Image (cartoon, rainbow, N blue to C red):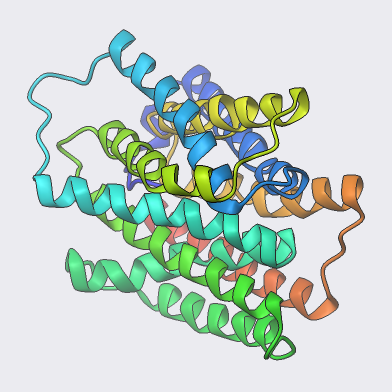
Length: 296
């Protein structure tokens, strides 16, 4: 997520409504990732590379149809940093979904806003406020519940990768903040290209079993779950505040494990549910406090 400051009181209600719907639709599409990753019997890196191939092509076409504004400039170092962090966010998240429950993967990654507050302090000198420190403390409490029972298990590796994906996503967010005068779509496009190149050797080592269902799943993930959702989110952020967008995006970690449970029967542990609830409460609570302060 980028950092966008929007005064909703100065935005027409019609535009606010379309912004809310766009963020809601993007969260809905993002929430299907865990289900399709679980259903595809492919190596995680092959899945990540395949969906990035179609997502990158989709974003490239969108960029050609609606080119970036003139004068948009980004430091090459920031562009590459944003791209690499997003690439490995995707790779770690897909691998985490294969090794641990979908609920663990998405809820551990959802602590990213708290990590972003900490990283932003060091990288862009944005000192965290008291509610962000509190959210970070609650995230650590939620992490304790996730990891307390998984030592030595394969699930522990999956949980660790999910945690790393959240930290990488936070770093990606901070780098996007540093691209405020540039074009964030270029970072996403470059990230998908890197992911495809990184995955090429894995296609030979772990050739995917192609079928109509697997092909449709990859197409959906690339074009809709990644490509369309990213463009909808960018559209919505122009019409509502980043805080409100993040609150609506809470739908993603709520729906993600629901789809997986409904289709595969995978059920998260009670401690994972408790830890996830603490993390989501921390993120939503700190966002609400920030929104109230901005309103005052």
